[in-house]
Length: 249
Image (cartoon, rainbow, N blue to C red):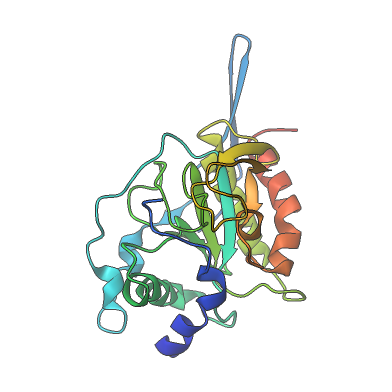
């Protein structure tokens, strides 16, 4: 896949992202019961570390540069789902190279400090660490204009506009990742949460507190069609699957 093509097709979905200033899915759920308290969580799915894709040589070596010190929030209370607006007909073994080109387009062409997404998922269901800082921590990403704080961004590798099939392995992996990540803060993936916009380029003026789904599409926070009509239509079932993985009924 020519590198230039991959970088050029990013334009539609990368709008609405901003700098940070502003495998197999696990199936077990851990339900911890204490007197008067039920805490729902899910097993951490396998996550391929960023060192696997960031070691590229030559064609996208801007992705391999040392990122600045990450910024952190206190916890993650919502997840935004994206698609990368890149071709769907890739070999999953080539996913690390595709992620390098995505990172190169953001850190090179757009001069960001690091790739904006916290995680990326390929069509075979493999989950990759994106932005540096630690997958277990609440790393402030650069994925949804105005709503990067206390959220995580998950990008599905591909383009999922109306009528495009969304691989089951991909949605299963997203559900497992969402269940685990939101479970760290005790958040039900089917819930709504209150988030405060930090940027008036979002759907809400800066300072506005909005009620958004705990598992949201990019378009819920920004004027875009991302993550595409096909993937957006799958979000309700992903929410339900993630809730089941947390042990919720």
